[in-house]
Image (cartoon, rainbow, N blue to C red; front, side, top):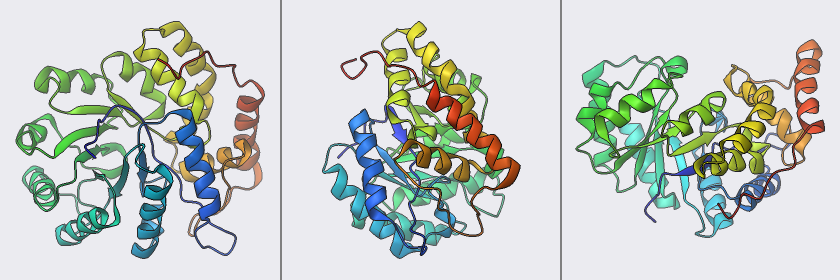
Length: 304
C-alpha cells in the first residue's frame, strides 16, 4: 500500500492492563473508534504511544494487531526513535516484516547530531527500506531541527515523502511550500495549530486528542478542507482547551485521562509515568469534563 499522506493520522496511545501488560481489547476498541470516525492512517509508537518504555516484542504485537484491525482500509505507520543508525535500520526492517506500511522517523535521539549527520542518518535508514517515510520535525521537544536546507538534500530520496511539522512555527508550512511545492506532504503535528496550518496548506494532521475525540478531529479537518471555515472554527474553539493538553510534558497522562473519560481508553500508564493525582488531577479533570459537557453536535462531515 502506497501512503497518501493526507487527512487525520492519530498518534495512538498504548493501552496497558493493571498488570502492566498490553490491553489489546481496549486498544482494539479505540482503533475501531478511529476507523469509524474516518481517520486516514494509524501511527504507533510515538511519544503518545509511550515508545520509550515498549519492548520490541510489544511493538511487534501492536503492529500486527493493528494491521489485523484495519484490514487494509488505512495504513499502519510506526515511529522510529533511536540513537544508533544500525538499530534504527533494524527497526525499519522489523516494521516492514511485521506488516507496517510506513515509518515516522525522528532525528537521532540523545546525541544532538549536526546538519551533515542528521541528513546522513535519514538517508541511511531510507536506503534500507522500501517503506515510505514521514520525517518528524520537532526541535522543541527533541532539540534537532530538520531545516529547509536539510530537506533540500533529502528531496532526492524518493521514499522520504512527508513531514510531521512540529516546529510550532506556522510559517514553516509556507516556507516548505515555497521551496518544494508539493514534493513533501506536510502534516501538522501540534494540535493547537492544526486549523491554522490546514488553512495555509497543510495536507494532514498527526493528532493527539483524536485519541479521545476522533469524530471532532476528523470533522475539523474535513470541514476546513471543504472550505466550511466557520463550521470548522466553531468546533475548533470548543476543542482548544482540550487540544492544549497535547502541548504539555504530561501529554500522555492527560490524553489517556481524556480517553478514559470518553469511554475509549484507560488512564493506565507505564512507569516512570504515574497516573495523575491531587490538584493537577482536579484541574485536568475539570477541563475534560467541561469539554464533554459542552461537546458540540457535529454537522455531517463524512461525505466531504
